[in-house]
Length: 217
Length: 299
Image (cartoon, rainbow over all chains, first blue to last red; front, side, top):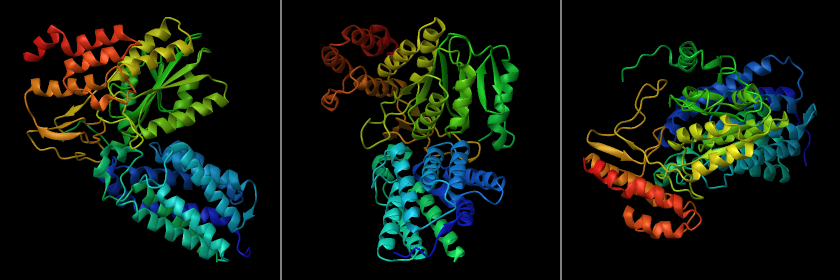
């Protein structure tokens, strides 16, 4: 198992910064997806939350362990986003941060453990199962792909790339699904044919992780 | 749509300032925490009631803060759940040592945020009972949806549970009364037109003139179906039938087989609800079959 590449505090900060840029750039698109099967505020809420995360991290100085940065980001999202996305993403990042603890750097296996913890937190709070047309349909495949690529001898960069690809495919795969959780579930069959906004923003955030790891070299 | 509006981003904050200015004798607004708190809170020894939800449903919930109703309200952004920080601040501001009831309407975001807040409150040693309101029969309560939505019963629940708390009932009693009210309350909404959320500036959905959406949610969630706007009499029958078909027997698996006619349904149901037959008879007679109701419907 290659353990040459490690994730450091700067990588996590770069991830959260890239995530802020991604949800902000795609805010209108996320809001359009949400308007079709939800209440049309997903892009606005996620942008508000990640902008607050950027501010909170900027106030922390340079040296903050990656786990601590994720916990702070999670708390900030819970406090600023509202709706369902705030508690879900907040709990996810807090769980990932707690999984990493106070270590100053971590390897691919630990990253996989952290993403599993994030996914479990989302499932615990939202009780969504695969196929319910939620963010779980992007995060689930992402965590599986990450671990699979690592156990096949892939590098960290290859593994997060596989995870980002799997998350994007997972988001696309929500189109034919009927929503069973959240506001879209009220639509019943009418939710079919629309891409889930939560799965879409989840794919953006996993892609942001890939970009941060790639930039780290 | 014409509105009296400044910057939509300031709407919630400005309306709370207005509420405080108009009703300073009844309540106060903590602008920092974005909560509305009853004047004189906390009331020592009294169970406190906290509710909240997205803004845009006024007078829910801030307008119901005061003697005999809510001790605090947490207004979120328009149609967006408030955050746990607000709920925790409200809970701490009104806890008089007898515990706090969280009244939570059944929406995914509200449920999650209140859950996190209740956990935080427990960490701080405050006893919290959470009561879920889910009275909207337009949504089937099943594994395949987020469950029935909380709508009109919220007002009755806040009033009755508020009176229970005001007379000195303990936490378990107030929460128990609140849950009984929810179990016995059912609602059904009908929309003539869409609302226009201030930030979006355009209607959530298109509803042609001459059509109504039956079973609409309070955020414009789609209902069961659309149909031509008939007479008030016809509309009332659809709504009362929908409510009566789900009243009383909360978790019966046999509801789908029930007759749709409200009067026969009530007869069937009152036999089935042996645990509370007296209430069933009272409720169904007032809601669906009393001469007084028929007289009103005919007019």
